[in-house]
Length: 391
Figure 1 (cartoon, rainbow, N blue to C red):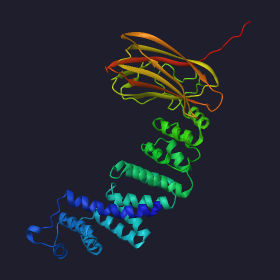
Figure 2 (cartoon, one colour; figure 1 turned 120 degrees about the horizontal axis):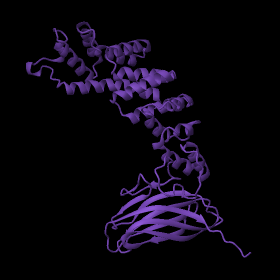
Figure 3 (cartoon, rainbow, N blue to C red; figure 1 turned 180 degrees about the horizontal axis):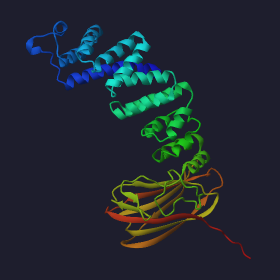
Figure 4 (cartoon, rainbow, N blue to C red; figure 1 turned 180 degrees about the vertical axis):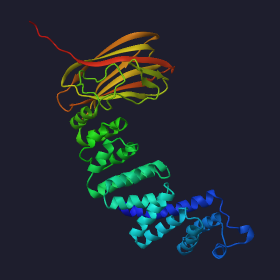
């Protein structure tokens, strides 16, 4: 279904939703105790509250003729009540009388700026006519009302520009950091293709960057993802080491080329270092990063602080060739029970084929005698080993 048709149906549907909600919230009881029917209410003097309840009841029964007649009476009795204009708006939409519908929508908003039917109608019209300023105005007001699902509204907004095949107004809008920008970005991340300029938009939404890069990586490969990672990161610093952020500092650069933490009892500390509280009862992926080491011989160096007897748990680095997912290294790290600093060094060979990038993961394995352990990974680096020949 086209976005415009969805919004048109939504305008009518939400008016009836309002009717049902108000009827419930007001505890509509149409004088049942007095034996008074809705039909009889049409022919006797009514108070404002009675008229509104009767209108809402007729709307709930989809009796538009009666709702119109009652609405006219309410408009005379209470000219500032927005409900008659909402009813007239729905009737005009159903009849295809857009000029009247626009008039009633604007009049409704004068009396009740929170009117969902009026806002939805104006959003539909501005979307059909591709008037970005009006589209975003109505969209933002609907978001502010918090009466509709933000994801659904954002999906409709993205659909407007997808159908128009012109993303530029939405890109400019997102560059202004609107309050609901994150929800719109979520919808755009699900598009078949990213629009031109979307990479620049991602600089403004750090919390969405990891998801963006994962998709670029999956669809376009390592080089494209790494290039985009550099362009959206706040830091202009080029990689100085093969393992990025080797001392586990708070950094703004997103995964997968910075650390992603996968264990809820592991965290990067404010002074640096990765603190891990191990239970020793199950195997667990703790941290992950994608790196790119050229072919050659290397040494993986790790500095730990804490106590980790092998019987309680085992920390293990695993290194894979990313393209082939072939294991290059599995290294166990255990040491005495008393807290101490320990260094570990493991040789690694990077092959010359099928290994343009690698995946470095830190795992914990359960021990035979599980016991709580606290470990801090102070640093990890992958350094090339240079062999000097005889002079």
